[in-house]
Amino acid sequence: MSPTPPRPSLSSLPFVLARRRAGHPRRWPSFALGVGLTLVAACDGGSAPATPDVVTATPEDVSPAPEPPPATPPEPMPSAEAPPPEPTLPPVSGGPSATAIQASNDFAFDLHRRLRRRPGNLAFSPASISVALAMTWGGAEGETAAEMAQVMRFPAADTLHDGWATAVKRWQTKSQNYELATANRLFGEKTYSFETSFLTATKAHYGAPLEPRDFKTAPGAQRTYINDWVAKNTRQRIVDLLPPPSIRSDTRLVLVNALYLKADWSSQFKDAGTRDADFFIDGAKSVTTPMMNQTASFRYAAPDGVQVLEMPYKGGDLSMVVVLPVARDGLPAVEAKLDAAQLSGWMKGMAYERVSLTLPKFKIDPPKAIDLAKTLKSMGMALAFDRNQADFTGIADPPNAADRLYIGNVFHKAFVAVDEAGTEAAAATAVVMPRAGSAAPVAPPVRFVADHPFLFFIREVKSEAILFVGRVSDPSPAG
Image (tube, rainbow, N blue to C red; front, side):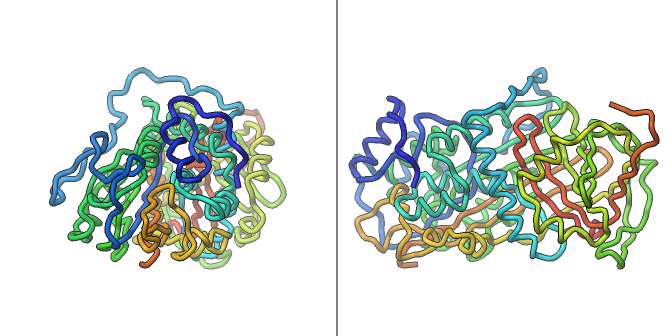
Protein backbone atom coordinates (compact mmCIF):
# COMPACT_ATOMS: atom_id res chain seq x y z
CA MET A 1 0.00 0.00 0.00
CA SER A 2 1.20 3.50 -0.72
CA PRO A 3 2.09 5.80 2.19
CA THR A 4 -0.33 8.41 3.46
CA PRO A 5 -0.37 11.24 0.88
CA PRO A 6 0.19 14.89 1.75
CA ARG A 7 -2.70 17.29 2.26
CA PRO A 8 -4.51 17.80 -1.08
CA SER A 9 -4.65 21.07 -2.91
CA LEU A 10 -7.94 22.75 -3.80
CA SER A 11 -7.62 21.57 -7.40
CA SER A 12 -7.91 17.96 -6.25
CA LEU A 13 -10.67 18.50 -3.67
CA PRO A 14 -13.68 17.13 -5.65
CA PHE A 15 -11.81 13.88 -6.28
CA VAL A 16 -10.67 13.60 -2.68
CA LEU A 17 -14.16 14.15 -1.29
CA ALA A 18 -15.64 11.54 -3.59
CA ARG A 19 -13.01 8.99 -2.55
CA ARG A 20 -13.50 9.72 1.13
CA ARG A 21 -17.25 9.27 0.81
CA ALA A 22 -16.59 5.88 -0.78
CA GLY A 23 -14.11 4.99 1.96
CA HIS A 24 -11.07 4.98 -0.37
CA PRO A 25 -7.66 6.65 0.01
CA ARG A 26 -6.63 9.25 -2.55
CA ARG A 27 -4.50 7.77 -5.36
CA TRP A 28 -4.06 10.84 -7.62
CA PRO A 29 -1.96 13.98 -7.17
CA SER A 30 -3.39 17.45 -7.06
CA PHE A 31 -2.44 18.13 -10.65
CA ALA A 32 -0.66 16.38 -13.55
CA LEU A 33 -0.74 16.26 -17.32
CA GLY A 34 0.31 13.10 -19.10
CA VAL A 35 -0.29 10.16 -21.42
CA GLY A 36 -1.85 6.72 -20.99
CA LEU A 37 -2.47 3.50 -22.94
CA THR A 38 -5.47 1.45 -23.99
CA LEU A 39 -7.78 0.43 -21.16
CA VAL A 40 -10.81 -1.71 -21.94
CA ALA A 41 -13.47 -2.24 -19.28
CA ALA A 42 -16.53 -4.44 -19.73
CA CYS A 43 -19.83 -4.94 -17.94
CA ASP A 44 -23.25 -6.03 -19.23
CA GLY A 45 -25.33 -5.78 -16.08
CA GLY A 46 -26.69 -2.34 -16.88
CA SER A 47 -25.48 1.04 -15.79
CA ALA A 48 -25.78 2.28 -12.24
CA PRO A 49 -28.02 5.27 -11.57
CA ALA A 50 -26.17 8.55 -11.71
CA THR A 51 -25.26 10.17 -8.40
CA PRO A 52 -23.31 13.35 -7.60
CA ASP A 53 -20.15 11.16 -7.60
CA VAL A 54 -20.94 9.12 -10.71
CA VAL A 55 -21.42 10.17 -14.31
CA THR A 56 -22.46 8.42 -17.49
CA ALA A 57 -20.33 8.91 -20.57
CA THR A 58 -22.20 12.01 -21.67
CA PRO A 59 -21.04 14.93 -19.45
CA GLU A 60 -20.38 18.33 -20.94
CA ASP A 61 -16.62 18.01 -20.58
CA VAL A 62 -16.24 14.80 -22.57
CA SER A 63 -15.33 14.62 -26.24
CA PRO A 64 -18.54 13.71 -28.11
CA ALA A 65 -18.49 11.42 -31.12
CA PRO A 66 -21.29 10.71 -33.61
CA GLU A 67 -22.90 7.27 -33.94
CA PRO A 68 -22.43 5.10 -35.88
CA PRO A 69 -18.62 5.38 -35.98
CA PRO A 70 -17.52 7.78 -38.69
CA ALA A 71 -15.51 6.47 -41.59
CA THR A 72 -12.56 8.59 -40.61
CA PRO A 73 -11.15 8.45 -37.05
CA PRO A 74 -10.23 11.59 -35.12
CA GLU A 75 -7.38 13.72 -36.38
CA PRO A 76 -3.90 12.50 -35.36
CA MET A 77 -1.44 14.23 -33.09
CA PRO A 78 0.19 17.34 -34.53
CA SER A 79 3.26 16.52 -36.57
CA ALA A 80 6.64 18.08 -36.10
CA GLU A 81 6.55 19.76 -39.51
CA ALA A 82 7.39 23.47 -39.46
CA PRO A 83 7.88 23.53 -35.68
CA PRO A 84 8.80 26.57 -33.66
CA PRO A 85 12.46 27.21 -32.85
CA GLU A 86 14.14 24.30 -31.09
CA PRO A 87 13.61 24.41 -27.31
CA THR A 88 16.17 23.22 -24.83
CA LEU A 89 14.86 20.36 -22.72
CA PRO A 90 15.27 21.07 -19.00
CA PRO A 91 17.71 18.87 -17.11
CA VAL A 92 16.29 16.05 -15.04
CA SER A 93 18.26 15.81 -11.80
CA GLY A 94 15.67 14.51 -9.35
CA GLY A 95 12.15 14.94 -8.05
CA PRO A 96 8.96 13.11 -9.07
CA SER A 97 9.93 12.80 -12.75
CA ALA A 98 13.19 11.03 -11.97
CA THR A 99 11.43 8.73 -9.48
CA ALA A 100 8.69 7.74 -11.95
CA ILE A 101 11.23 7.17 -14.71
CA GLN A 102 13.43 5.04 -12.47
CA ALA A 103 10.42 2.90 -11.61
CA SER A 104 9.63 2.48 -15.31
CA ASN A 105 13.23 1.57 -16.12
CA ASP A 106 13.34 -1.02 -13.34
CA PHE A 107 10.06 -2.49 -14.57
CA ALA A 108 11.47 -2.55 -18.13
CA PHE A 109 14.15 -5.05 -17.13
CA ASP A 110 11.75 -7.08 -14.97
CA LEU A 111 9.47 -7.42 -17.99
CA HIS A 112 12.34 -8.05 -20.39
CA ARG A 113 13.53 -10.99 -18.32
CA ARG A 114 10.12 -12.58 -18.95
CA LEU A 115 9.73 -11.58 -22.59
CA ARG A 116 13.28 -12.61 -23.56
CA ARG A 117 12.08 -16.22 -23.64
CA ARG A 118 10.10 -15.37 -26.76
CA PRO A 119 12.09 -16.38 -29.86
CA GLY A 120 13.21 -13.96 -32.55
CA ASN A 121 13.16 -10.18 -32.66
CA LEU A 122 11.51 -8.26 -29.84
CA ALA A 123 10.46 -4.67 -29.18
CA PHE A 124 8.36 -3.01 -26.51
CA SER A 125 7.90 0.38 -24.87
CA PRO A 126 8.21 0.27 -21.07
CA ALA A 127 7.25 3.95 -20.94
CA SER A 128 3.91 3.28 -22.68
CA ILE A 129 3.12 0.27 -20.51
CA SER A 130 4.12 2.03 -17.29
CA VAL A 131 2.10 5.15 -17.98
CA ALA A 132 -0.95 3.15 -19.03
CA LEU A 133 -0.91 0.97 -15.96
CA ALA A 134 -0.25 4.02 -13.77
CA MET A 135 -3.53 5.45 -15.02
CA THR A 136 -5.28 2.15 -14.38
CA TRP A 137 -3.77 2.04 -10.89
CA GLY A 138 -5.40 5.40 -10.21
CA GLY A 139 -8.74 3.57 -10.08
CA ALA A 140 -7.51 0.51 -8.14
CA GLU A 141 -8.09 0.01 -4.44
CA GLY A 142 -6.95 -2.22 -1.57
CA GLU A 143 -4.85 -5.30 -2.30
CA THR A 144 -5.41 -4.88 -6.05
CA ALA A 145 -3.64 -1.53 -5.89
CA ALA A 146 -0.89 -2.93 -3.64
CA GLU A 147 -0.06 -5.77 -6.04
CA MET A 148 0.03 -3.45 -9.03
CA ALA A 149 2.33 -1.04 -7.21
CA GLN A 150 4.74 -3.84 -6.28
CA VAL A 151 4.98 -5.26 -9.81
CA MET A 152 5.20 -1.88 -11.52
CA ARG A 153 7.65 -0.48 -8.91
CA PHE A 154 5.25 2.44 -8.35
CA PRO A 155 6.22 5.03 -5.71
CA ALA A 156 3.64 7.05 -3.75
CA ALA A 157 0.66 8.14 -5.85
CA ASP A 158 1.44 11.88 -5.93
CA THR A 159 5.06 11.23 -6.87
CA LEU A 160 4.12 8.81 -9.63
CA HIS A 161 1.42 10.87 -11.34
CA ASP A 162 3.21 14.20 -10.95
CA GLY A 163 6.39 12.57 -12.23
CA TRP A 164 4.80 11.15 -15.36
CA ALA A 165 3.01 14.42 -15.99
CA THR A 166 6.31 16.28 -16.00
CA ALA A 167 8.04 13.70 -18.19
CA VAL A 168 5.28 13.44 -20.77
CA LYS A 169 4.90 17.21 -21.00
CA ARG A 170 8.62 17.38 -21.74
CA TRP A 171 8.36 14.67 -24.39
CA GLN A 172 5.52 16.48 -26.12
CA THR A 173 7.73 19.54 -26.69
CA LYS A 174 8.02 20.26 -30.41
CA SER A 175 11.48 19.92 -31.91
CA GLN A 176 12.97 20.73 -35.29
CA ASN A 177 15.31 17.74 -34.83
CA TYR A 178 12.84 14.91 -34.19
CA GLU A 179 9.19 14.03 -33.71
CA LEU A 180 8.18 12.53 -30.35
CA ALA A 181 4.43 12.50 -29.88
CA THR A 182 1.82 10.94 -27.62
CA ALA A 183 -1.98 10.86 -27.64
CA ASN A 184 -4.56 9.56 -25.16
CA ARG A 185 -8.29 8.90 -25.29
CA LEU A 186 -10.96 7.22 -23.17
CA PHE A 187 -13.59 5.44 -25.26
CA GLY A 188 -16.54 4.76 -22.94
CA GLU A 189 -19.86 2.96 -23.33
CA LYS A 190 -22.35 5.77 -23.66
CA THR A 191 -24.86 4.24 -21.22
CA TYR A 192 -22.43 3.16 -18.48
CA SER A 193 -21.74 5.13 -15.29
CA PHE A 194 -18.15 5.98 -14.30
CA GLU A 195 -16.82 7.72 -11.22
CA THR A 196 -16.75 11.44 -11.96
CA SER A 197 -13.50 11.73 -10.04
CA PHE A 198 -11.77 9.19 -12.28
CA LEU A 199 -12.91 10.90 -15.48
CA THR A 200 -11.83 14.26 -14.13
CA ALA A 201 -8.45 12.93 -13.05
CA THR A 202 -7.61 11.13 -16.30
CA LYS A 203 -8.57 14.16 -18.35
CA ALA A 204 -6.83 16.75 -16.17
CA HIS A 205 -3.79 14.72 -15.21
CA TYR A 206 -3.18 12.63 -18.34
CA GLY A 207 -4.94 14.63 -21.04
CA ALA A 208 -7.34 11.78 -21.87
CA PRO A 209 -10.91 13.01 -22.55
CA LEU A 210 -13.84 10.60 -22.63
CA GLU A 211 -15.47 9.85 -25.98
CA PRO A 212 -18.86 8.06 -25.84
CA ARG A 213 -19.15 4.89 -27.97
CA ASP A 214 -21.79 2.23 -28.54
CA PHE A 215 -20.14 -0.98 -27.38
CA LYS A 216 -23.44 -2.68 -26.52
CA THR A 217 -24.83 -2.93 -30.05
CA ALA A 218 -21.75 -2.43 -32.26
CA PRO A 219 -18.64 -3.89 -30.57
CA GLY A 220 -16.95 -4.90 -33.84
CA ALA A 221 -17.33 -1.42 -35.31
CA GLN A 222 -15.87 0.10 -32.13
CA ARG A 223 -12.82 -2.17 -32.25
CA THR A 224 -12.21 -1.07 -35.84
CA TYR A 225 -12.71 2.56 -34.87
CA ILE A 226 -10.24 2.38 -31.97
CA ASN A 227 -7.66 0.47 -34.01
CA ASP A 228 -7.95 3.10 -36.74
CA TRP A 229 -7.42 5.84 -34.14
CA VAL A 230 -4.27 4.12 -32.90
CA ALA A 231 -2.99 3.61 -36.45
CA LYS A 232 -3.57 7.25 -37.36
CA ASN A 233 -1.83 8.47 -34.21
CA THR A 234 1.21 6.27 -34.88
CA ARG A 235 1.45 7.25 -38.56
CA GLN A 236 0.00 3.85 -39.56
CA ARG A 237 2.82 1.98 -37.81
CA ILE A 238 0.68 0.28 -35.15
CA VAL A 239 -2.26 -1.48 -36.79
CA ASP A 240 -4.76 -3.95 -35.30
CA LEU A 241 -3.67 -3.34 -31.71
CA LEU A 242 -6.90 -4.83 -30.39
CA PRO A 243 -7.52 -8.29 -31.86
CA PRO A 244 -10.95 -9.91 -32.10
CA PRO A 245 -12.76 -10.56 -29.81
CA SER A 246 -11.09 -8.12 -27.41
CA ILE A 247 -14.03 -5.70 -27.76
CA ARG A 248 -17.38 -7.28 -26.94
CA SER A 249 -20.92 -6.14 -26.26
CA ASP A 250 -20.07 -5.95 -22.54
CA THR A 251 -17.09 -3.63 -23.05
CA ARG A 252 -17.52 -0.41 -21.14
CA LEU A 253 -14.24 1.51 -21.34
CA VAL A 254 -11.17 1.58 -23.58
CA LEU A 255 -8.29 3.87 -22.59
CA VAL A 256 -5.77 4.30 -25.38
CA ASN A 257 -2.20 5.55 -25.50
CA ALA A 258 -0.22 5.96 -28.70
CA LEU A 259 3.49 6.79 -28.75
CA TYR A 260 5.43 7.77 -31.87
CA LEU A 261 9.06 8.67 -32.52
CA LYS A 262 10.95 9.61 -35.67
CA ALA A 263 14.51 10.90 -35.38
CA ASP A 264 17.58 11.26 -37.59
CA TRP A 265 21.04 10.17 -36.49
CA SER A 266 23.40 12.94 -35.46
CA SER A 267 26.02 11.14 -37.56
CA GLN A 268 24.21 9.54 -40.47
CA PHE A 269 25.33 6.55 -42.49
CA LYS A 270 26.02 7.11 -46.19
CA ASP A 271 23.97 4.97 -48.55
CA ALA A 272 27.11 4.13 -50.49
CA GLY A 273 28.57 2.52 -47.38
CA THR A 274 25.76 -0.02 -47.05
CA ARG A 275 26.50 -3.44 -48.49
CA ASP A 276 25.32 -7.00 -47.99
CA ALA A 277 27.17 -9.07 -45.40
CA ASP A 278 26.61 -12.02 -43.10
CA PHE A 279 24.66 -11.69 -39.86
CA PHE A 280 25.18 -14.69 -37.56
CA ILE A 281 21.80 -15.55 -36.01
CA ASP A 282 22.89 -18.13 -33.45
CA GLY A 283 26.68 -18.10 -33.57
CA ALA A 284 26.88 -20.38 -36.57
CA LYS A 285 23.92 -20.01 -38.92
CA SER A 286 24.04 -16.80 -40.93
CA VAL A 287 21.80 -14.74 -43.19
CA THR A 288 22.78 -12.11 -45.73
CA THR A 289 21.50 -8.65 -44.84
CA PRO A 290 22.29 -4.99 -45.67
CA MET A 291 24.93 -3.72 -43.22
CA MET A 292 25.49 0.02 -42.75
CA ASN A 293 29.01 1.33 -42.16
CA GLN A 294 30.58 4.54 -40.89
CA THR A 295 33.55 5.73 -38.84
CA ALA A 296 32.81 8.51 -36.35
CA SER A 297 33.17 9.54 -32.72
CA PHE A 298 30.74 7.83 -30.33
CA ARG A 299 30.48 7.27 -26.60
CA TYR A 300 31.75 3.72 -26.08
CA ALA A 301 32.57 1.22 -23.34
CA ALA A 302 33.80 -2.36 -23.28
CA PRO A 303 32.88 -3.96 -19.95
CA ASP A 304 33.41 -7.67 -19.48
CA GLY A 305 31.98 -9.66 -22.36
CA VAL A 306 30.14 -6.83 -24.14
CA GLN A 307 30.61 -3.69 -26.20
CA VAL A 308 28.30 -0.75 -25.51
CA LEU A 309 27.82 2.10 -27.99
CA GLU A 310 25.63 5.19 -27.80
CA MET A 311 24.35 6.64 -31.07
CA PRO A 312 22.85 10.12 -30.54
CA TYR A 313 19.98 11.45 -32.60
CA LYS A 314 20.10 14.93 -34.06
CA GLY A 315 19.79 17.53 -31.31
CA GLY A 316 21.26 15.28 -28.63
CA ASP A 317 18.06 14.87 -26.56
CA LEU A 318 17.57 11.23 -27.56
CA SER A 319 19.90 8.33 -28.30
CA MET A 320 20.06 4.63 -29.08
CA VAL A 321 22.32 2.47 -26.90
CA VAL A 322 23.46 -0.77 -28.51
CA VAL A 323 24.62 -3.63 -26.27
CA LEU A 324 26.62 -6.15 -28.31
CA PRO A 325 28.00 -9.35 -26.74
CA VAL A 326 31.57 -10.13 -27.73
CA ALA A 327 30.65 -13.77 -28.36
CA ARG A 328 28.35 -14.38 -31.30
CA ASP A 329 26.17 -16.63 -29.16
CA GLY A 330 26.52 -14.53 -26.01
CA LEU A 331 23.24 -12.60 -25.97
CA PRO A 332 21.17 -15.03 -23.83
CA ALA A 333 23.72 -14.79 -21.02
CA VAL A 334 23.74 -10.98 -21.22
CA GLU A 335 19.93 -10.80 -21.21
CA ALA A 336 19.69 -13.11 -18.19
CA LYS A 337 21.59 -10.76 -15.88
CA LEU A 338 21.12 -7.28 -17.36
CA ASP A 339 19.20 -4.77 -15.24
CA ALA A 340 18.71 -1.01 -15.03
CA ALA A 341 21.58 -0.52 -12.59
CA GLN A 342 24.04 -2.41 -14.78
CA LEU A 343 23.08 -0.50 -17.93
CA SER A 344 23.33 2.80 -16.03
CA GLY A 345 26.76 1.80 -14.76
CA TRP A 346 27.94 0.99 -18.26
CA MET A 347 26.64 4.32 -19.50
CA LYS A 348 28.51 6.22 -16.78
CA GLY A 349 31.71 4.44 -17.76
CA MET A 350 31.50 5.45 -21.42
CA ALA A 351 34.03 7.72 -23.11
CA TYR A 352 34.28 9.12 -26.60
CA GLU A 353 36.16 6.89 -29.01
CA ARG A 354 36.62 6.90 -32.73
CA VAL A 355 34.61 3.86 -33.79
CA SER A 356 34.41 1.91 -37.02
CA LEU A 357 30.74 0.97 -36.80
CA THR A 358 28.89 -1.75 -38.70
CA LEU A 359 25.18 -2.02 -37.96
CA PRO A 360 22.43 -3.86 -39.85
CA LYS A 361 19.39 -2.12 -41.24
CA PHE A 362 16.39 -3.67 -39.53
CA LYS A 363 12.66 -3.39 -38.99
CA ILE A 364 10.70 -4.97 -36.15
CA ASP A 365 7.04 -4.98 -37.15
CA PRO A 366 5.19 -7.89 -35.49
CA PRO A 367 1.86 -8.88 -37.06
CA LYS A 368 0.18 -9.37 -33.67
CA ALA A 369 0.16 -7.50 -30.38
CA ILE A 370 1.76 -9.04 -27.30
CA ASP A 371 -0.82 -10.19 -24.75
CA LEU A 372 0.81 -9.30 -21.44
CA ALA A 373 -1.89 -10.71 -19.15
CA LYS A 374 -0.17 -14.00 -18.28
CA THR A 375 3.19 -12.29 -17.92
CA LEU A 376 1.91 -9.64 -15.53
CA LYS A 377 0.02 -12.22 -13.48
CA SER A 378 3.17 -14.33 -13.19
CA MET A 379 5.04 -11.25 -11.96
CA GLY A 380 2.61 -10.88 -9.05
CA MET A 381 -0.28 -8.82 -10.44
CA ALA A 382 -2.92 -11.52 -10.00
CA LEU A 383 -5.80 -9.77 -8.25
CA ALA A 384 -6.24 -7.18 -11.01
CA PHE A 385 -7.10 -10.02 -13.42
CA ASP A 386 -9.38 -11.87 -10.98
CA ARG A 387 -13.02 -11.30 -11.87
CA ASN A 388 -14.13 -12.13 -8.34
CA GLN A 389 -11.56 -10.15 -6.34
CA ALA A 390 -10.34 -7.25 -8.52
CA ASP A 391 -11.11 -3.86 -7.00
CA PHE A 392 -11.33 -1.04 -9.53
CA THR A 393 -14.14 0.77 -7.79
CA GLY A 394 -12.22 3.99 -8.28
CA ILE A 395 -13.14 3.73 -11.98
CA ALA A 396 -16.71 2.53 -11.57
CA ASP A 397 -18.57 1.47 -8.43
CA PRO A 398 -21.97 0.05 -9.48
CA PRO A 399 -24.26 -1.30 -6.76
CA ASN A 400 -24.29 -4.77 -8.35
CA ALA A 401 -20.91 -6.45 -7.77
CA ALA A 402 -21.31 -8.42 -11.01
CA ASP A 403 -21.09 -5.15 -12.93
CA ARG A 404 -17.68 -4.19 -11.52
CA LEU A 405 -14.51 -4.20 -13.58
CA TYR A 406 -11.36 -6.29 -13.75
CA ILE A 407 -8.47 -6.49 -16.21
CA GLY A 408 -9.02 -9.16 -18.83
CA ASN A 409 -6.04 -8.47 -21.10
CA VAL A 410 -3.18 -6.06 -21.61
CA PHE A 411 -2.25 -5.70 -25.28
CA HIS A 412 0.98 -4.04 -26.39
CA LYS A 413 2.58 -3.57 -29.80
CA ALA A 414 5.75 -1.80 -30.89
CA PHE A 415 7.33 -0.96 -34.24
CA VAL A 416 10.99 -0.02 -34.75
CA ALA A 417 12.76 0.64 -38.06
CA VAL A 418 16.44 1.60 -38.36
CA ASP A 419 18.16 2.75 -41.54
CA GLU A 420 20.92 5.07 -42.75
CA ALA A 421 19.00 8.24 -41.84
CA GLY A 422 17.76 7.33 -38.38
CA THR A 423 14.99 5.57 -36.51
CA GLU A 424 11.21 5.42 -36.62
CA ALA A 425 9.42 3.81 -33.70
CA ALA A 426 5.89 3.54 -32.38
CA ALA A 427 4.02 1.74 -29.63
CA ALA A 428 0.57 1.29 -28.18
CA THR A 429 -0.75 -0.64 -25.20
CA ALA A 430 -4.21 -1.86 -24.25
CA VAL A 431 -5.58 -3.08 -20.91
CA VAL A 432 -8.84 -5.01 -21.31
CA MET A 433 -11.19 -5.12 -18.29
CA PRO A 434 -14.38 -7.23 -18.48
CA ARG A 435 -17.15 -7.30 -15.91
CA ALA A 436 -16.72 -9.47 -12.83
CA GLY A 437 -19.47 -11.76 -13.99
CA SER A 438 -17.67 -11.84 -17.66
CA ALA A 439 35.55 13.60 -28.72
CA ALA A 440 37.78 11.85 -31.33
CA PRO A 441 41.07 10.20 -30.29
CA VAL A 442 44.12 9.85 -32.56
CA ALA A 443 44.41 6.08 -32.10
CA PRO A 444 43.03 3.67 -34.74
CA PRO A 445 39.24 3.34 -34.50
CA VAL A 446 37.61 0.75 -32.30
CA ARG A 447 35.76 -1.88 -34.33
CA PHE A 448 32.09 -2.34 -33.43
CA VAL A 449 30.61 -4.94 -35.78
CA ALA A 450 27.02 -5.82 -34.93
CA ASP A 451 26.92 -8.96 -37.07
CA HIS A 452 25.22 -11.12 -34.44
CA PRO A 453 22.26 -10.72 -32.02
CA PHE A 454 22.24 -7.56 -29.89
CA LEU A 455 20.03 -5.40 -27.66
CA PHE A 456 19.09 -1.76 -28.16
CA PHE A 457 17.56 0.90 -25.92
CA ILE A 458 16.04 4.13 -27.24
CA ARG A 459 16.24 6.62 -24.41
CA GLU A 460 15.96 10.23 -23.34
CA VAL A 461 19.51 11.27 -22.57
CA LYS A 462 19.06 13.69 -19.66
CA SER A 463 16.53 11.68 -17.69
CA GLU A 464 17.77 8.23 -18.82
CA ALA A 465 14.13 7.29 -19.50
CA ILE A 466 13.93 4.16 -21.64
CA LEU A 467 11.31 4.72 -24.33
CA PHE A 468 11.86 1.50 -26.29
CA VAL A 469 13.66 -1.79 -25.63
CA GLY A 470 14.53 -4.15 -28.46
CA ARG A 471 16.40 -7.27 -29.46
CA VAL A 472 17.62 -7.95 -32.98
CA SER A 473 18.06 -11.69 -33.49
CA ASP A 474 17.63 -11.66 -37.25
CA PRO A 475 17.50 -8.36 -39.20
CA SER A 476 16.32 -10.03 -42.39
CA PRO A 477 12.60 -10.63 -41.59
CA ALA A 478 10.11 -7.77 -41.53
CA GLY A 479 8.72 -8.83 -38.15
